[in-house]
Length: 215
Length: 215
DNA sequence: GCCTGTGAATCCATTCACAGCT
DNA sequence: AGCTGTGAATGGATTCACAGGC
Image (cartoon, each protein chain N blue to C red):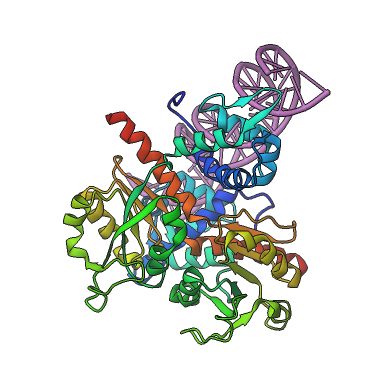
């Protein structure tokens, strides 16, 4: 199904991007879409859309466009988002709680089956979603018995690497890290770091520059 | 202070990255750092560190390295994070609430001065941080009177563009968008889209591929 | 005529390798 | 000797432009 080995990382990110408007188009009954239109909806170039898709096959019809539903299915298949994934989360502060409760994740097939913390105050409490907060010391066993595939880290930054290592040792194959500490991992695992204070610093940079033009 | 116009976007992102370990090094009393060491801590190449910094000036001493404190200050100055920024947030669901409460933001100088929602159930409620949730209809006036510079959007995706437009019309110069809808903006404004379900899809892609090697 | 798929050309970012300073 | 700063070389990704099929 997949043509060949080396696909640019930005291409993968954009596939996820493309799937968003496709989902909407499908609901609204639009069953045909051109690269031009999809590109517009995602704020990229049409050549980019065509090239990205061409890495994985020939999904379109020349002179016509892409079938919305078929294309969306292909993308989901490529991204492996047409199945359920089993996750756990460590660090049940404000952010962690918000993330487990997020209905969107569940809708998209990301299912939290365990929540951990080290704070004795929190351990044992039941979350609105029904999960009971477990001691982090149980993570090793639960990752195995519940076949947890992805670990989400929302601890303070100082604990991020240790927690990630613990989860990966226990068998987790991917880490989604929300702390400001850049987590590293062996080649067998994948890590995504999502530090959103970094995004704010980016905004600050641009604002700072445009303001200095005025003064 | 800044050498010239076109600086690569990845460079800006990495400056924020560099500031994290520098902050720690400063606290631990390390007052000298080489590009090699800093690179190691951030998981990039030392040439990359030097090139990134060289866009903005000559901060190091040949044969010696960089002064930790001076370098951190330069970076903060470049990113314009050595001052306070005034923010508001729209959409007080789980995620929105978690973000306003985030102590880290405040510590870094990002100060929320208003929180909005459209849900009459939520309007008027007081948040733990002390802010009262206001009706979105008051956003126009409050953005002006409180000199709000950055708007954070944590609404459902369907409302993201409308809310962003409203905030930008009112005078906000930057949007941090947490919804899955890709918000676009006029040239005078900056938008950062932080869709973390996209990060999960990325992980799923890699996991899906490595599993298909086994089967 | 219209729109996809794709080699070729272009653009951009990273890495190399070394000159220059301490 | 050690480490920065930087032109030159390399490697990737995006855009161009058009051939191929509807």
